[in-house]
Image (cartoon, rainbow, N blue to C red):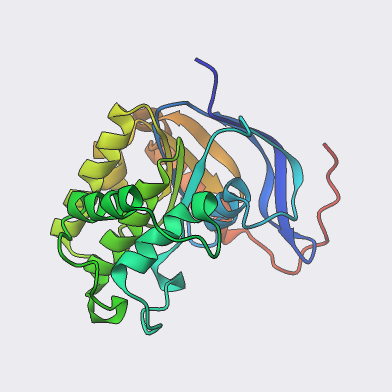
Length: 244
């Protein structure tokens, strides 16, 4: 089976200093892959490049252009004070189909209701987003991903600062996506969670430390190397001049 995404010599830089540095590798199709590493390791920058929110990079990202992509950013990017109803947030997942001014058909409203039911929020459609707890708001974002019906799903710290029950329910949703042969790439911090639920891991410290089966990647020597690389970062180092 061919990979869902191929990365070749990818560098994402800010003012000449790399957040992701000459990264190459393949994300397996239909697999759950976790991206882990120290703070500032470039994990969110990588997901941004994969999801298209970061377009200024060098190297190549190769995937089937017909493959729909769903991107769930960090929960901190969601402004829960904005006056919007839960159903409207979920409906944003249909934007590619209906456009900015298209109305929702009956079947699309049914899909929104089904997505909310799948994340445990039946009957919440007309509530204001600001009325929800952090865990409930994260469920809404997962419902938005569900209605996108994407083959490639990118999740940036999807379980950060939410309760254990919500985490368990959303992890079950990830396994449903795997059963449906969807490809999931998630930035995570909880290594025990990664060991239990993810089959592949990319350990990143701006550069690739290790990439492959979870048990092989999350070995003590690899984690130690990632910490060493993080401690050696120099924000005032010369601009990246390495050529591919």
